[in-house]
Figure (spheres, helix red, strand yellow):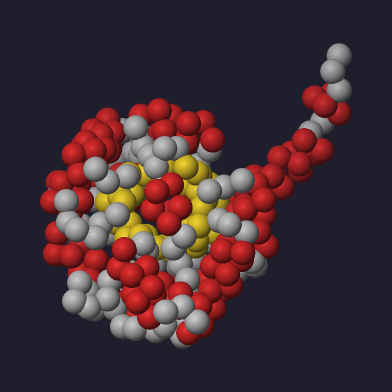
Length: 256
C-alpha cells in the first residue's frame, strides 16, 4: 500500500469512521474517498471492529488509517498488525513524545514494535519476514496530531524527526486548549505556523473539516489532505435534511 505514503498529499480526501458497521467503510469507498481514518479515540469502537474496517478498506482499495486512543505501544502495534496503513496519534506535544511514538511504529533497532508476521500485515504468515519488516519500518505511516500551543511551538523539531511521515492540525482541541473560538485569529496564526513547519520539514500536513466548503478552503490555504466529516454526521445531516424538508409547512414547500 505504497499509495498512502505517496498519496496523502496533493489534495487527497479522507473521512472519519465512527460506527462499527463495516458498511460505513464500504459506503465511503464507493463514494470516492481516498482514505478513511478509523477512530479509536472518540468512539466506542474496539480492536475487533477496527480489524474488520481495515479488511473492508483494503478489499476496496481505500487506505485505512487508525486514530489510536493514546501513545501506547500495545494498541499501535495491534492495529498495524491488523493491516492498518498507518496510525494517527493524538496529542503529540513534545519531541520526546514524538520519538516514542515513532519507536512504537517501528521494529528494532529503529523501534520497539514486536514481530507478528502471522497477522494480516504479514499476510497470515505468507509474506516473507523481510518484506513484513520492511513494510512496517518504511511504509506504515506515523501521523502526529498537533493540538496544543506547545505542540505548535515544537512543530519544527517534531516534524524533523526521522519516522514522522505526516502531521495533522487538530484545530478543535487547539482552540479549547487556548480558551478561544475555533475560527479565531489566534488559532489561525498557530495553524499557519504549523503549515510553515511542515513545509520546512517536507512533511505533508492535513486538518479536519466539517463541510466540503471548509475542506476546499483548507486545501486552498496549503493543507495537503483533509479529513472531511464522518460517517455519523453524514448520516445525521442527511436524515435531518429529509425530515426538515418534508415537515416544512406546505406554503414553504410549494412555490407561489
